[in-house]
Image 1 (cartoon, rainbow, N blue to C red):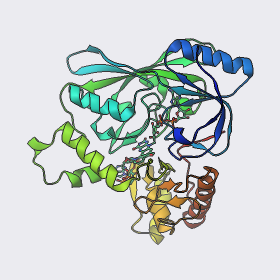
Image 2 (tube, rainbow, N blue to C red):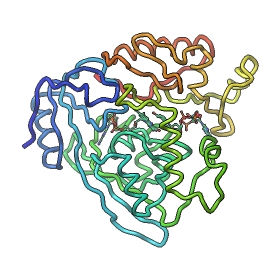
Image 3 (cartoon, helix red, strand yellow):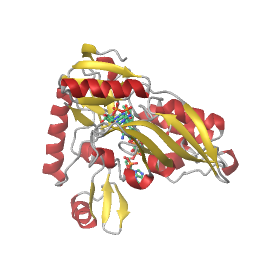
Image 4 (cartoon, protein in one colour):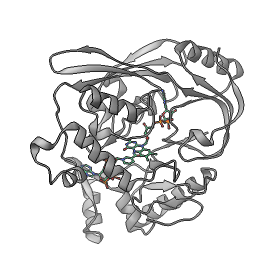
Length: 339
Ligand code: FAD
Ligand code: NAP
């Protein structure tokens, strides 16, 4: 029987360190506890917040419902075929520790995704990505509990509808499922993805024989530590905005005034702009009000004084408006607001 803690302070459970309270909080260590907690919330008509590491949420006010802190643990090699290992991890496992475990075991493909904070269960929600690899590239299937029916469902890659920092769980199936485990399809032989410019630059002095998955992971960790604030020191939720996708025509217009604008092709008619570049060029990099724009990476907003995350939303709104006025580009927030 899970314990329901009332008026629970969430400051240590979100990496923005927002000092807000949940009406109730409970830890979920097995599926029976999950069923019981969902029943409790239904009986009391409480909204649910499924919480992993709290590294992609903005808790700007008290949450008037039940927080389910997912602590389901376990990982196992479930099968192998000629080229791949299929490795299953429970939703509460730390993503970063799971990547390290896979490298140690010789299950390859996660190295570019090293050191991303948070849990395994949250990784499919926004199809986490970094340094040219996304979760969808290594995904086999996931299991999730349907909050409405209480049934456990398996999702294939197709049914997850993965997109750029997006999935079905942020759209049609928003708040409908609690992910309980994820199975990955990992390579038996290293198949390195080294096209990302920052990675190429960092590996330029190594010979091809020297570049191993372990080295790629180390280099990714080094780059990340040099650019990104550690949430334990400076509270943040990583990139606050997605990189906007615009038409190639819009890029041509922007290039007239900003010939050095940073963009990457998406398809024959669309490009992705670097939101960090737009924010920097609009003069916001390093600015500090109650919240701040990180000096090494303008896409990261921080909460150095550990205030309510409403101050970060205020800064984000001012930046969005400035980018719209200056470039005519709409920025979309990446982390989700609660309540
Ligand atoms: P939470 O913040 O706890 O939850 C995020 C969302 O997922 C919420 O809506 C929550 O309800 C839902 N959720 C969580 N667990 C479950 C579950 N089991 N079932 C159903 N729903 C669930 N992201 C990237 O993509 N790439 C990066 O490189 C990256 N770098 C980051 C660097 C820093 C310093 C920080 C702070 C964040 C970074 N992020 C990055 C964002 C974040 O780490 C990821 O989105 C991560 O997957 C969030 O995991 P979490 O467990 O903390 O999720
Ligand atoms: P960066 O290397 O400074 O590059 C800036 C942006 O340009 C990135 O956001 C990246 O988009 C894009 N980009 C660079 N090279 C690209 C290429 N060859 N093809 C397509 N797009 C390219 O980025 P960074 O801030 O240091 O982050 C490094 C990686 O970690 C990125 O993949 C980033 O997404 C990820 N990251 C994510 C978060 C988060 O919270 N979501 C936080 C920190 C880092 P993409 O974002 O699409 O890769």
